[in-house]
Each structure stands twice: as C-alpha cells, then as structure tokens.
Image (cartoon, rainbow, N blue to C red; front, side):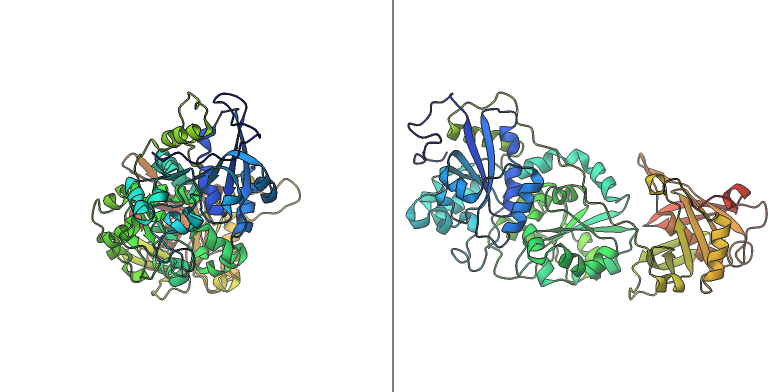
Length: 577
C-alpha cells in the first residue's frame, strides 16, 4: 500500500471535508490523446455515482496536444481550461502521464498506467534509458513526491521503481491494468469485430507500430506495402495499429498518402481509441516493434512476430524485451509464413504474466484506492468494464483491380488475387468496372460489376439501367482486350459471358464447416470461371451446351467452393444491373 500522501489543498476551502458530506471534484488531466484514452478506460470506476463531478483538462507542453484536445471533444467531456484547472482545487487529479507541469494542479494526484510493461525510454527526456513512467525525474521532481498514488499493473513494476527511487515506490500500489480489463471482458465479441472488419475466413494479421524514430512505421516503412503486395487478398487481411502520437505527427492526410499502397490493397487502419483493441481481439497474429500494444495481444494468447531491428529505446529486462526475445523475427515480407510456423505454443504467456497482475480485478482494486483517497465509501454495485464497440471506421472495401494467379487441375481452379503491379507472374488482370482506374479496365481480361444492394441504389426518379445481357455484351464490345464480362448479382450468384460463348449463370455454394457458413468474394469465383473457360475445359472452348450444367471447384484462400455453371435463363439475362 502507498504511504499516506501529504494533504492536498481542500477542494472547497477551509478544513478538509468529512467522509460523507458534499460532492467530490475529480479532474482528468490529459497531456496526449493516448493519455486521455487511458483515462477514459477508468470511467466505470465512478459510473453512477452522483457525488462525483468529473472534468477534463489538457496539460500543455506536448507536441501532440492538439489531437488530445480533439479526442476530449470527441468523447463529449466537459473541458476545463488549464488556467482554471490550476486555480481550482480538486479532491482527486487523475493522470496517465507524469510529464508536464502537473505539480501546479491542486489535489491528490494519481498516476494510472500508460501503455504496458514500461519497456520504452524516450531519448532526450528525463533520465537516459529509464522509462518515463518510472523515472524519478518526473515522479519526485526536486525531491518532492508528485503523487499520492502511483497505480501499477504488476508487483515487478513496484520493485523496478524501488530500485530507481524508494521515495517514489512508497507511493505505489498494484491495481492491475484497466485497459486490459476492457480487452479481456470483450473477448466474446471476437466474431462481431471480425464481421465489422469484413475479415470472413481470412487470417487477420495486425501490425503494431509505436511512435518515434525506432517505430515500425519510421524504421521499416516499406514493410506494410511489401506485405500487402505479397499476401493473397483472399487468404490474409492486414490491419495497422498506429500509436496516436504518430498519427498526430503526420496528420491524417499525410498519413493516408504514406500508407496509400497498403490501404489501396485492402489494409485496415484502426482508429486510435478502442478500435486498436478490437483489432487485437479479432486478429490471428501480431507483427510488432517494441511498442506495448503487443503485450495486450500476448495477454490474449495471440502469436507475436517481431519486426523490431534494434535500437536504444527498448528497456532491457522489461516484459516487452522478453516478448521480443521469445518471438520469431520477420526480416522481410516473404518470411511471414515461416515466422508464423516458427511460433512456439505458449511463448507469449510468460511476458504477459510479467506485465499484468490482478486480471479481472483491476477496476475493483483501483476503485478501492481512489475512493480511499476521496474519503467516501464506494458505491455498492460491482464495477463492470465497458465492452469495446465494433470498429466504427468502415473497411475500405474490396480493391477494384487484381493481378490474378490461377492454376487449373481438372475441374478445380485455384486462384490467388494480388495487387496490380506485384512482381509475381499473373494469369490475368481482373477489374471492377466503374471503380478500377481506366488503364486497368482497358487492360483487364476480366471486367465485372457488382449490383448495388439496399441503400446503395439511387432514389426514385429519372433513370436508366443496363440488363445483365446488355451490359456484358456492351462491355465486351467496348473493351477489345477483355475476354470475359461478369455481373455479381448476390454473394452466391453471378452471370458471366465470354467472347466465344453464351451467357452463363454461376451459382456458388457456401462452404459449411465446423458449424460455420463461409462465403467468398464472388469476383474471385468469376476469375476462376474465366480461367477455366479459357482453358477450353467446358464445351470444348468456353461454352456450355444448351440445357447442360457443369460443376467445378474454386479454391479461394485455401478453401474449396463448389460452383455450378449452366446457361443463363431469360430472367437472369433481363436482370437490371
């Protein structure tokens, strides 16, 4: 337990209030967006308590303060200007960073976990080689204790702090990690998050980048685009978890331009608050630098692959250093399969156990400590972590053009779709009419369109629409290099036409396995049908004789889908598209 802190300035003037009278003023002091997000994760501690007045203030002095203010506004929090926050006295001041002029804030000060594991030091700040969250230069400035309580996640962190400053360690207590509580409580929503991300049966690989000169994005900027270019779209999905400070440094526009090759290939960029944690729950593995997000993945049991190639920021002996030591190293994008295969079951358990204690009890323990400092009894109800919402950032959708590799083995066609421009040899270029660049559309052997559904259809009024028969015929006439035109009518139904054959109906049977119904992108099946017809397997050169039906298997993302071809009916030919 922490030693008793010196009395703070009384919240309402005069003598200190009794245990059960009046209200309590709690100030959340955030210096960056990351710090604010950590503070928001502890709000359930005070949920439903009408005695608590909550206010937020922005601590000046950070290069990332603008984004912190924007994050406060997005959260809908009541904001107190810094000058006013300094003038007023508070019963409690909650912080997630010890930096800035926090000693000017009047009230009992509590420092909450910022990140996990204290595995990173920042050059040019505080004591060299020491994590700022444990640095006596910030915790005991001028020899005076800044805090009334330093809430830590693991007993080893108290021991590390004691080795640096016994005076600072006397204020520490192990409560666990409130952010991890949200992550663990939300594990049951994994399928919801994957559905929101459009993952399907693909392997979701998360890439985690911290901020600063040794971060993944700064040290190995080409890795994201290289992975996106090499990994088959229907087998893998990529998602980037980027530290808010790096987003702030670049700005959203510059960031989008920097990441354009990977984003255009389908990579998902997680939002800075809550979405990153939902992605960790949804993912199948994590590629990481030395940022602490990977420790949360380790606590979930996710395989971790190191992409950190060394530097001075990683703190030796920290849980993050231990995790990277136990993880296979990804030297280049071509080594992903080998790195995934080199994972040792349970390798991530020890580093996670060394970073997080009190799992499942962190909010209860934190509430007990905070209400002790407030000198009022806590509410009787149980503290419940807030479940992470589904990612609100919409996925970018399926890329509009692909370089398609295809292999025919009898009536089985295996297709792999990669971004256009990949170095790998391809069988054909497939492009979505109306979305793909014109140069891709003019070069595509397969052109297709998707029939809009639901709200995507325009409102009633003047209009004209192609029929399936009309659009496929017109497309082939207008694009001399195109050999097949197709229309995706539904997730299970397409119609396609080759230059030498009739209009064909394509029915795709969903794969039923392990209690799940799995569907693939119908455009991938159109590529398989295009390849098969081009091989002359059907009708001696691409046609299906009248009244005939043919069955084939399309392997997409390693999964076999049964496909049935027959001549299109008059109704199918007349469908609007």
